[in-house]
Length: 200
Ligand SMILES: Nc1nc2c(c(=O)[nH]1)N[C@H]1C(S)=C(S)[C@@H](COP(=O)(O)O)O[C@H]1N2
Ligand SMILES: [Mo]
Image 1 (cartoon, protein in one colour):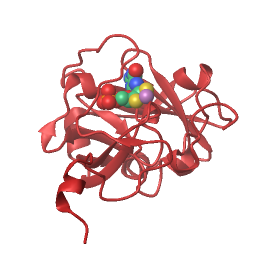
Image 2: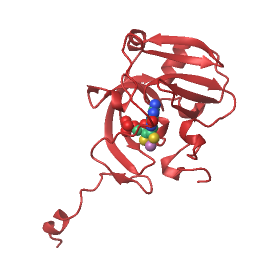
Image 3: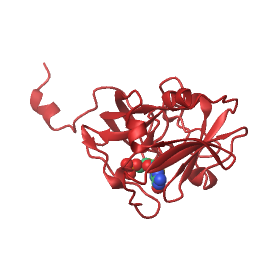
Image 4: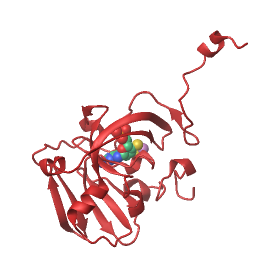
């Protein structure tokens, strides 16, 4: 027999395994390089861009008119916290690309943001339901400090790839490092392979 009291002394455990080196965080920490930009819904835009041309741009209302998804996912930050079962509402990147009607031969994207942050992603990691522009978190409008009005959500990669205050995706032929990648973070960032830094 095992005493229940013994287990009572243990910290609560996550209901499923976390990627290597991660711990379970029950809050929602804020991690921002710089200040929180304030963007009104009126001025908010999201674009698909090639070179410096905005090939297709959506206003807030135009985005809301696209098919939406509710997704429940775990999130893993390179600073080692993970949150479980976070609930989001957004529009998949597939939907934006399909609605743009563009021919998209490029194999990478650079997400760019209000405030200047960037992060690079392989095209395969933002298609087939893997990435979203999201504006609701756990049933509430996304707070500005967490990227509101809307952020990129790429839950299967470390959370630095989920660009807050996202303003667009630039289609690029060749991979190039974004903000944290230039500082030594991994070009892809798969938490299950512990791709934290260059050389991982
Ligand atoms: N625009 C922008 N997006 C960003 C960042 C940032 O500094 N600016 N930080 C990244 C990092 S390192 C992490 S871990 C997550 C943190 O998101 P949170 O503050 O909502 O937890 O946002 C990512 N997206
Ligand atoms: Mo991070």
